[in-house]
Length: 526
Image (cartoon, rainbow, N blue to C red; front, side, top):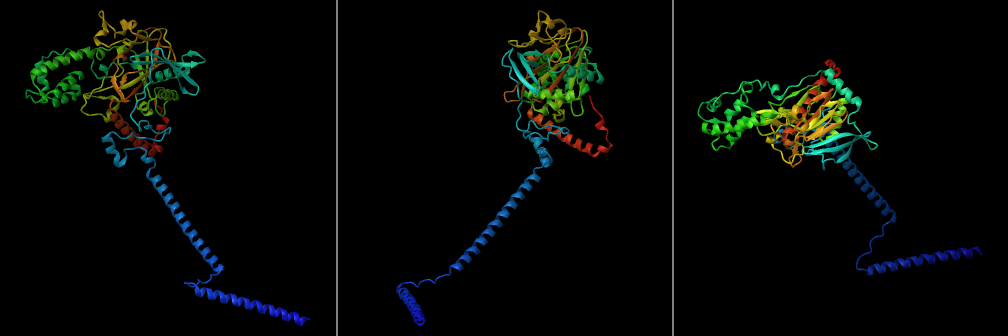
């Protein structure tokens, strides 16, 4: 029985083997019939191994390129960082310094805003001077200078633009551009610094023209004195040489300017005696009209100047910060302007109507930019874009600030004399001024001394900004004036600020180097 089963199994296996052989023979016979030989059958296991090898190689290549890319990016960032460090924040340094100054059109120097570093970073984008709009007389607008102080600014005049400033709290007007404590501190600092008698511009230049003898020279003699080479012709260089003689100058700057204008307009660049006679007569007439605001300007008071920079009293620095926020001007202009002037008017003290600023022309240069001024300028004049005046106490009687021609329809210099009375004489005609502001402790006035040039910069002087101080009838009057100096030539202003920044940087470096031997940190300039 078992033998039969074994025999059947063997028979079945033989049949299966025969069938497989027959199938292989059929496949071979079919492959012989095909035009191309059948490709060899590849092992599936071998295919899987090759695919893995390719994937790993591709992954390695991608990772290498990725790491190289990351390293290049990091190297580029480091290169940019070290080639645009803090030393390049002030354009015009190093090799490009002279070209930037000569061109005058580049951006102004910039500095990191730290408490101990000089700020010249506000005019770097464009040369524009923000200007407050007056809207109309009586218009009131609110401004915030600090989180805890809101000011009410009222338009008092449009010609010139004058604003009255006081604090505004719960719908009640309270004088408070300065607090009572701040007013007291400024007065005390002025007393500690020491006040001196105020001098007029003519006295400051060493000329008290009211006491000078009259110039009794004929036109021929004047021409002969100006004609340095005695060739019978007057050239521009001879006038310029006379203007530079300083102590030897006996012609006013206005007369010299008038003569230079005619010299430039003359085709030959020189004028004869006959031409000079007409020119000199006109210059004397012009000088006589302008002398009213210079040599005949009178005032009587005492004043001092308080420094507001680093190391000064915190109240003085706070006032400077408020002026920056109020005027919306670049901080660099405010920082480079004149110190704070504090004036005390006693009984009977006054100041005649005058201009805080001066008309500018090619023959003059601004006093504050004299570091970068043209050496050939005839004279230096104050260039004060605007005035912010602080009242430090309330005057019992008198002492008003007067603007004689504010909001007049037209301005006529001859019209300042009415019925034989000069409106610039505040002792006699203060009550006739168009606008008078009574001093009240803590309040402030802001007015523009110059118009806009239509391009965002400072233009011509506003002739309506004529102002004076009425005599004090009873009590004392304490005021402080903050002037913002701006050169009408924005290129000149930029050049000046670059020079100041460079000097400050050099000085700061020396101070740091000699720090152990210096006692500057113990000194506080009032």
